[in-house]
Image 1 (tube, rainbow, N blue to C red):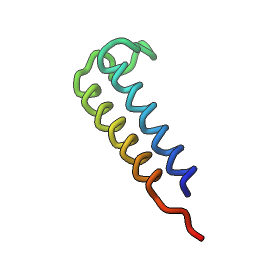
Image 2: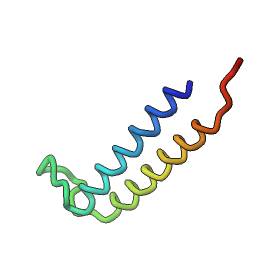
Image 3: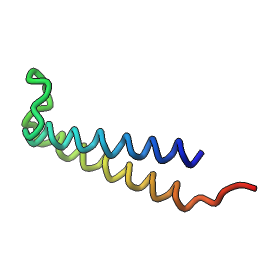
Length: 66
């Protein structure tokens, strides 16, 4: 359970950082993406990355069963 939580949290952080990069224009890939240079995607990326960090913190505090 903890491993799955860490993987999900890490994927959320990585995806959030990609959205931030595309929204700010630093990661313009693919070139035809509707997300490039759109400030709203910077905001959504930051929210997703923060949520991913929260998931990893919560999972790390779970007590193991047994």
